[in-house]
Length: 116
Image (spheres, one colour):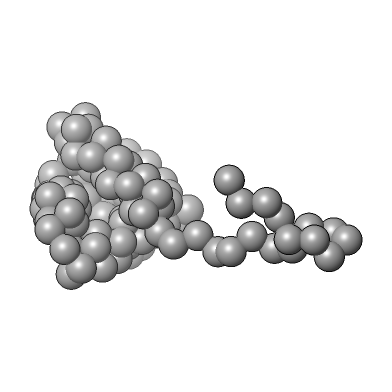
């Protein structure tokens, strides 16, 4: 048995692999290391799913990850859902490629850059 914070002293059986267990084992840094990217990805796919059908499948993957994170072993979840995690990376890359690019700044000397 390992000493821990009093907030997790009376954890229910089976909750040691969930968010509370993550906070206990990995601390605030580990907790935020999962929470921040998950929130960012959720916002990204929600925005894209609202714009069109391209974001629906990644939204389903994120919803599955969020739902399973409350009851499933978080350390094993990545192994079970790795195809979905690859899909989320591909989706983010597609969104980045489709984003409008800013106009090129004028080159030093006052001449405009040559457009290909």
